[in-house]
Length: 312
Image (cartoon, rainbow, N blue to C red; front, side):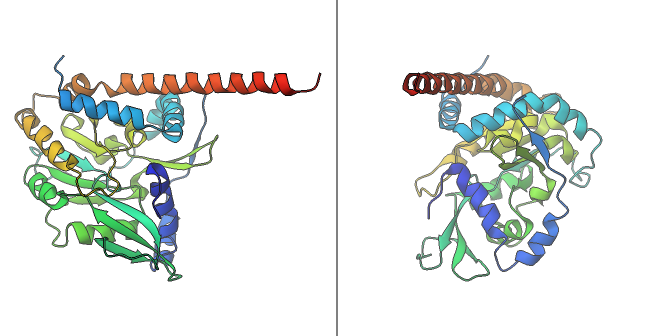
């Protein structure tokens, strides 16, 4: 069963609680923070520009509506997060920049399948408690090589919106010797919010809560709403959906290598460089505004059609 980009994330999170580790996972989710209801209230790089354009074009209704609501609520959200406890222990080496990596559709691709479906293409499989379904995943091409390289330069943090047991199972596949990933964070470290319009629960990653120098901290993620509080720290990556010809991690490595001199210079703030290169805040706002205009036009067209067809 192949799910769409955002259905896959929400479906895998919900189905995982039916796995063999369901009881322990459910117990841990009890400690999740309460939901916050949200409602609508100079230098360029050609390759990077193309990727940003692709990302903006691929945003669907769910992502646009989520971003619109989060942007409207950003000031009040930020005020409520002040003084929250850090998720990570103090950094031992202050010179190492921190690279935060999303998990699903960034380092791997997980789908919900029936157990009757062949799993020969999967790098890992996790069976549900009922025995009739499972989570099967494929690692992104080059992920081990990328993590090996990154761990020699960065403090590598993998942060997923998935449940604890799922994250730790995948870590065993990605980093069995525990040498590549410095820290692993799960949905318990995310800000959980519910959309008043769609009732979907979404997870936001606040880099401020890591206790790291934000001028040297980056989040690589395929979902912009996850980085709503820190868009100046976001390095977007195209969603990985299982293609064997994918080479995004190699491109990410080249991009980071080209910035390493500035990454290790304490006087440089990489957020300024990323803002000049991507300008995500403005471009995402423009994309969301276009979506809102299209939605309003559709509503007006439906209203006009109803008025024409309604009896006088």
